[in-house]
Image 1 (cartoon, one colour):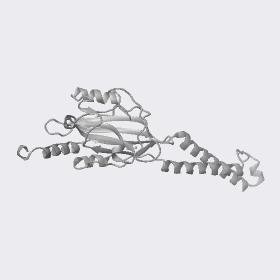
Image 2 (cartoon, rainbow, N blue to C red; image 1 turned 90 degrees about the vertical axis):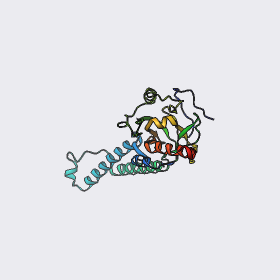
Image 3 (spheres, one colour; image 1 turned 120 degrees about the horizontal axis):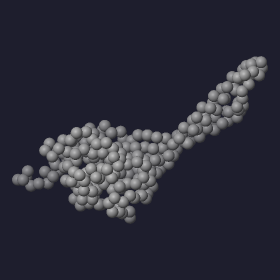
Image 4 (tube, rainbow, N blue to C red; image 1 turned 30 degrees about the horizontal axis):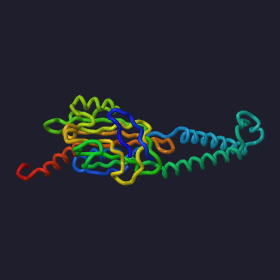
Length: 271
């Protein structure tokens, strides 16, 4: 069984950017609805762009040679018409082969496309006691999903109104967000758990919502102090293409749900 090491230690996860599951009531719906489920941000140049450039070159050369076939001999023997790179047969063969390669790559990309999916739970965390919100992320698609970028952003909540203070912070690395939250009296592995996910880690390939990797766990204090917490997760698939998704781990709607849930637990005469 995989176990997280001590805080601050970078890890590589064993194992093999989605649908949105969990509670999405109130204000959380609007923020999560604004986030794209998953988007393709980069394609591998060697297997995507270079074959297309080669296909365009051979197609132009094929058209050039066909055009020359319809000219008289006096034109063909003069510049620039006597310029020849490949004959018609070779150009047609190469163009057909590259086109078949691109079609095969497109089909492979669709059948092996990873899907970044995350789920929220209000039960126990694997790393911290009395967690009120736990986020699991997994690859619900096919193929492997290797993490190549993880960024975080947050917004503190006003102590009185609970509304977010100003705009969301800029995207930052793990060390930066942990230090910033420490300045606001939120300690990692005490008030929340934000494990460090190193580049090269692999998202678990799973279909069940609870079978994913736990990436965030928040206690009551963290949920009442934070207004928003997002994670930008970028992965690389089997073909080298990169996908990313923003995980809405905490929002004002989730904070409101916590308050309502705790009020229901209290005896009627204390409400």
